[in-house]
Length: 239
Image (tube, rainbow, N blue to C red; front, side, top):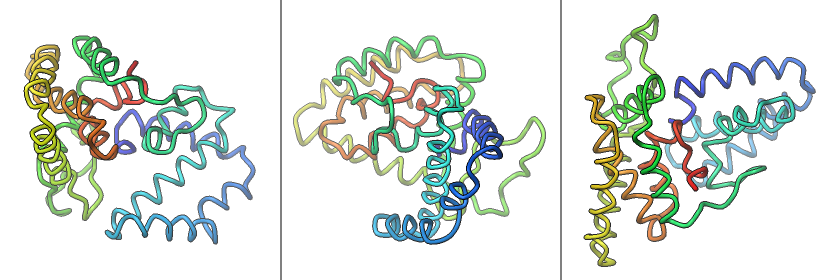
């Protein structure tokens, strides 16, 4: 999901240009041969779905190549390339997440400022996470101004994973007796989000609820529920 954003695609185009001047032997090591097989095997132990393995492998390769030419990249560009792994496998310059209350305060503070292309991308990701994946034949051609911001890899169902993660958050909040505070965080985020018809209000509440419950959830669930806003203000940068 992170790599399929329009903003991420632009940064990867910069990365592709930088690789033409990089050590070709190092580039080849991360794109073919034994090292790739090693990474693929390691990923397969965690992800049984072959489609998910392929997507994760490609993402890992992009990150490795980004590290290879990191010194030639603008820091914000490198952060965008490394974003899919930033919280799970902290990279250079990444700090541990701030305390939960600080993260939520930062999220609420930045929500009202969402606008323009950044807000449109948030809405596009939210839409992808709220609608079941379509069969490949039903996907519109990606061309011209009407092209989709996101194209979901065949076989993956982000919407199903998103819905399941949200159900887990609600159940966990009930189990630990934090439902009232949890709902208050949701309401605060929904009030702070732009009410301009792009449909991100409810997703802002979900993201805030996930952050509020982060200490009781697997980090991958938190990151998935925060994903619509990760391009606008990365989770690991909330402080």
